[in-house]
Amino acid sequence: MPQQRQYGFSLLTSTALLGITGAATVLGAMPELTTLPDLVGAAPLALLGAAVWLRRRREHRIAARLRNLRLTVTLPMPPAGMRGDTLVFQPAGHRAWCAPCGAWQIEMERDGGPDLPWHLSLARRDGTMDPLPLAHAASLDAMLTLARRLLPGMVPPPLAGLLDGDLSFPLLGLPDGAGRGIMALAEGGYALQAAEGCRAIAPELAEILLCRGNTVPATPF
Image (spheres, rainbow, N blue to C red):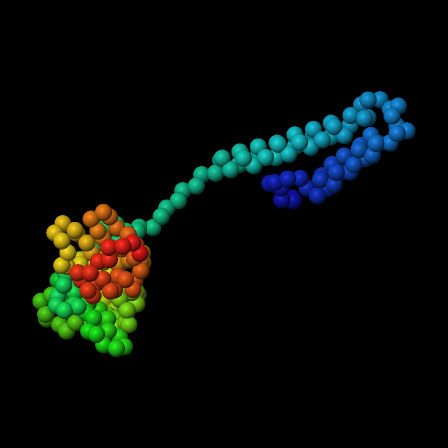
């Protein structure tokens, strides 16, 4: 049995309708046939109306078929950072920061070296093991991007998502109540937290502000 068509007419049906319409148009345009009954002269109009009716019927059939669809969309669970989890880094020395998380902590440092000055490692808070290096890079953004990719393959599953959420870095030396800091967002990018809200900043500016700590530009970027 041939497969039933869902949309439109078959090639044979379409050809037949076009042929009938064309023939009726020619007959209506021939002067010598003006004595024929009015029914013949009105044939093109009738055929046009039939074609419009068939097209509307086809469109209604398609619309009804779409209305009968039942779709269910299931989205995956959002990453930890999008659920509101934030890993907060605190100063731990000159250009050094740490973020405690249970029995572990993420340690970050910029040692001023010429090649790969940014370092990120995972350490036990009780000091019972040497820190595990996670990433060395030339910039803050490159280091965090690299560490987020490598961490799941370097540590057990309970620790694999430590860097999946937003990372917060308070900026010190600011007026009381300013509440300013840098956010490294889970989905990528950086934001400057200020009393009036957050605004996006470039990775290079985030690195400069983080290293200076108490320097916050007053003009928009």
